[in-house]
Length: 159
Image (cartoon, rainbow, N blue to C red):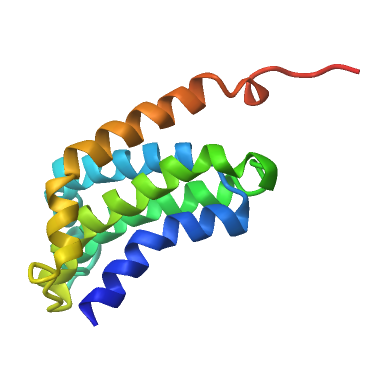
């Protein structure tokens, strides 16, 4: 079961990017932002949410981190649907694959604690952990290049 969950995490951004014709570069950057927010603000978010509910814990810390990491990626892919044509999909493959790798690396430990799924015995997981810096570095570089040189967003065309 752990292998199926890991494969789903790895493939989900690529599949969604293809089906929605979404902007995977912006998705990768949104995923990085969500991970940063979860890393530095999850405790404050949990404290703030506990004040909203009189019973105390609304969601566990792992659930909040999971939401903070995955939701920005999902919303970004939905909001940028129909951005990329199928003929230009090849430009989105690298950020989509990097998004899958980063999603698995960031959500995997949370799922291990929250849903008792053990990824540490999987060879795919071990390879992902070894390639973490490469996944983040290449994903960031290609995503930024695509955003910087994607002029269609920023130039209004007049006819």
